[in-house]
Image 1 (cartoon, one colour):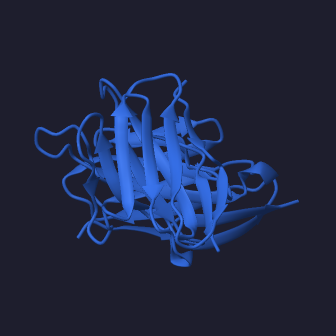
Image 2 (cartoon, chains in turn cyan, yellow):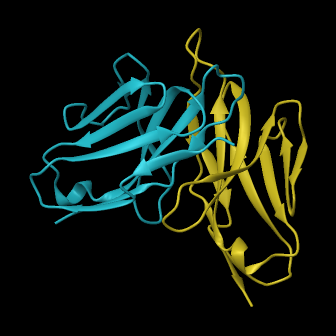
Length: 117
Length: 117
């Protein structure tokens, strides 16, 4: 298998607070992890790409100081939404690519529903 | 600009019937095309992955086709079941970016399939 988990599965927080979302590859090592955001009835939008031990690469228009990504090990990446606002409410999904990258496959996590009140 | 267009946007069919979903892409240079199934509130699950040299691939009741010349793909679902109700997303990957080990994915908007009893 190739299982990716996310924690929490849903979170409600107050405006101005920070929220951390974890993405773990449970049964494989991940060279690269990706963070996506998905708004209702829209497709996934790539926010950033993180490689273990190096800084994340953010997509155009994504604020790196607001969405902090840490890929500290080959099995864990975290996304911290700092000073959250209601417009940050969304479905956040991570995916992971195996190490070594012998296939094209990305394995997606189950997603985290963030609601900012 | 790399783009993936899917049609129809939504589809309603009766249980037991077959259906075909379409995907057109303009991603270059092409690496592979994937079809994912995404249940509401869940992360995408891979159905098929096809490279340039493959023109058909099956996964149970799901059969994907690829015409790399016309840059079109289809996903055929046979003998639909209620559990097939989901969003089906066509995703195209560009070739590996130079010496780095990631290939950026371009997502279609998805086709929302509803299977009625």
